[in-house]
Image (cartoon, rainbow, N blue to C red; front, side, top):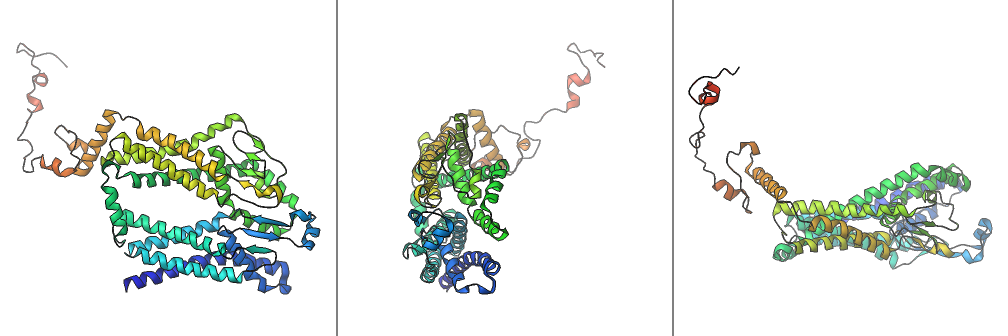
Length: 476
């Protein structure tokens, strides 16, 4: 009965996650249909448009074919009538991943993560099948197979990741599979913490770089906001069109953060074939008049290459936090296990960078606009090397002996539950087993004052005023 309940709850979570994404698209589209077309609106086209955008939000490439009437109205050549749109708004993708991870964690805590992940993924895949079979818009086509596999695959990835992380951390409720793997990893000796600490360090690097990338985008808005406003004015759209453009750009903010992190890492990104935007320099041709492209810096200097120290610093922070934990737990004491951890952090950080760059790069139009965004390979390589340098410095550098003794003393006093000023005997290096042996070395029935008693301070010859020859001094 418990597994059935877990499966039902996971199915509800998947249905809610898909419904929220569709409603977020349907709500503004309904307003657009109402204000733009009024009573003459073709409401039958509302759902297909929302379904196509939902698929595109899950990184499904769209094949665009413009009709002759549109080509004449826009004033572009026939060679630009067909192109692919594949740079996805990652905001929808992140919402699906987070909702799936939350459902997977809940199933792991219930003790049936396999059932929960499978049930939720099947329901989400069924919804993706329904959307792909009903969302058909003239001139816009999405692959029927990839239109189902990508949304379902992203949900499966998020649910499986959340479930495995929760089961690995708690060590129970996973049906035995994760526990067995965990026991095998623990049997590696000093290399046992490598998997856990590498994942933890990667999470730290990802959080730091995401935050700094978002801050970079915000600073660009403050510094080049006038360029964005100029492009808005050049578009010559009404209030409704400006609202639609603004909402679309908000959905692309996570994509812009990925571009900013790639710029900070060094490789930068492209805005068309033969273009490059990096700290070393900026080479741009004709850029589409999209307002968000006004944030792109017009020029760069070789001195701006110093920004690559930011990913190095992120790796150093991750290495410092992981090393502090290793010292606290007295594990992975040798340099070889720590080198493995540093390499694991760098490798996983490179994998995360490549996975983030894949939906953030691709095509946004015909011709030269078929190459836009960061290159996943160069982006991953730069992040991996820079994080490796930072994490390696902190994890492999020799420790100061006094600092190590101080950390051991703090850990011992914390385990004893006393303050360091209450310890009236010399503190030696604690036993790795914790406070049991340490507490056993201290007598529990000792009476304060019956050992190493000191004489009252009033009996000191100095305070009694006696000199060495028995007289009294005249000190005042």
